[in-house]
Length: 338
Image (cartoon, rainbow, N blue to C red; front, top):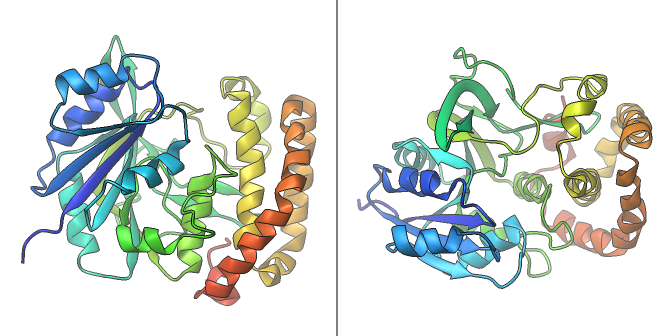
């Protein structure tokens, strides 16, 4: 049978630092049937110029304003003809066999909606890529407190994650998605929640995908590298935040605010009340801890509370639609809350 077409959609804003490296990795893919869309979110640096001059074979789509990452991916889908979508970020480098090995897995099980690569960390030195054996993520893990982490983040890759497994949710740096599953995610006409805009919408989308009955798989055979713009350290317990106050100052305030607000919007939309009540004390204790931390060290985050309240009516409307279409019940979802 012929290979299914795969679309790589790169959404970028001011990515001149990375875009050559990212697109050179795309060009080296061993998978033969690819189309590439580059959706520019209104860059003001040399991003578009580099694409036009050095990668004219790729389709450049220009936006006059920054729509955000996942709304940009959604717009890029309008020009996508592939059975599968690689939702690529500009600071991610794919190993040459990444797409080929991912499609081999996806084609064997039509119930897989999304695939997560083993993503390792890299950094730039003097314009050159320096790859490491530190894990960036193998997907999202969620706890009874509703704390969400990038599984494996900051650990040395010693082969401890060399078994394919089902995970709670794929992370947003470069998931490989079944296009039909993505289309099924639409709520009020939107795949990505526009109220979330920029940060945390990947968790919301992947949580909804699991609610709608799609599997999400991590494969160590699919390897990528990511230069994460936020902190690269490990935070395993809430107390670890106090050891990382300095590192967290490097994170833009807007990103911290959106992270806090949008994780709560995602929970309101996608979490069963039965499971919330079951884990009430773990959730409440975590909320008290986080509220204390942001009050002391990141008080600007508290400015999101009025916005969260204003968004509640529309968020609850979306919740009603999502829950009416949910296929995975409370018991099935509760097994992911560790």
